[in-house]
Length: 566
Ligand code: AMP
Picture 1 (cartoon, rainbow, N blue to C red):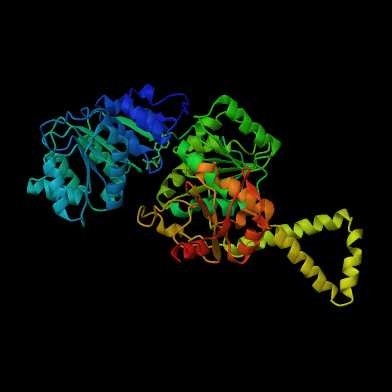
Picture 2 (cartoon, helix red, strand yellow; picture 1 turned 180 degrees about the horizontal axis):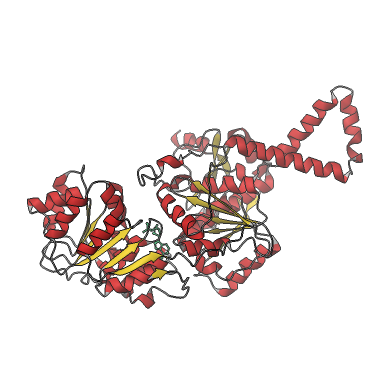
């Protein structure tokens, strides 16, 4: 079986998942199963063995976790036996943690007990947890084998063994351990094998240990030839913590007329929309949880040009055709090559040129390679624009704006100003001063922080270097370099949103939305970061102004703290 079809309309409910799990998925904002989930869930629930070719980013973890959870006893009805029903073997500690977290996230409502087991961690806690009883063990092979030999991991009641990232486990020398572990599992177990690649050694394992497996492979033919050369494709490797900043940087450089940004889940759409609005972009959310009327409104704002970013899930963007679109951005690597092809097909239509940008976390690099293979097109990995690039680009935009004014030639009213200055200054100097003013009015930013570069050669070893800090908008304990923090006496209880604060600041002062840094909105007050050297000007400018129809105190945050302490 190959995953060629885009098979749009299959829902999680169609896959027969129990209501508790459907609720969890809805809460997580998963709108539809990914191709691998569509193909894998049902056979796994039915107890079939499975051999799946899938890399990180395809949604493969949920593809095996959900069927395992589907068969867990209802809460409070755990059986007498202590050993796990499911054993997942993974190559690395990072993956053990990640997969455990996924099981926990999906299975919490069912009371499923999940235990990660890996080398390097204190064995005492693992022993205690094993004694209390577990439903799912996610382990690296070496440590799993330790426990099996000690008799502390009881596989008697095991129903399923999952080998996740099997090729990686073989590369790391776990072949013999895996054989020994499988030999310790019951004969009539279910065996599931996922691997990004299917070299002969994997086939060997499959032949020895899988019985009539369902075979899933990434579709090969489907996507070929559908992309048009008019779409310029590029990718950027970015750690998770820096994605929002990277997106902003790219948008500033690319200056799209209108762009659509694809996210995986509803939550991600909502969060990113808020973040981008907080940074001064005009972004609208579009996802499957919205009423038709809301969606129509969003689309008309995009068409009318009062919004320039559309942040959407695949489901919501299906069938969407917006003429103005110049850019498609994948905020993460799509879950299948077909999804990638569909997404980038939104631009470059009818002979227009388009740009497709993909932000990939280091661990998603493999998925990117898979997309290249299937589409038979290169997606070159580029360096993110640096602060210097951004400055150069802003300078270029200022130059362009000046050129336009020069061509329009309605400069007569300014003649006298230049003439009077020319008595005292050199014409070149006057021109430079005028350019400086124009440039600063165009929103030049003092200094932005560099986004750490990830060299492509590091990325194949996945999981090591990616960070999991929350993304962008929140203010940190102390303001970023060169920034001051302002206290506003209005907060969530007054209905304040980030865009209200940014709107007030940019409306009343010389600041541009992009100058505004982190924003945090508490119940009764808000904190906003602005460039240090502009803080007083912003305070002055906002004196007497109203936000959402209400007057507010505004001052530097530190002053406020000092006063409370006094
Ligand atoms: P994986 O390939 O298992 O590493 O999953 C990649 C990411 O996709 C994870 O962050 C999941 O939370 C997310 N994900 C998995 N399935 C879905 C889905 N059906 N819809 C949206 N996001 C998903």
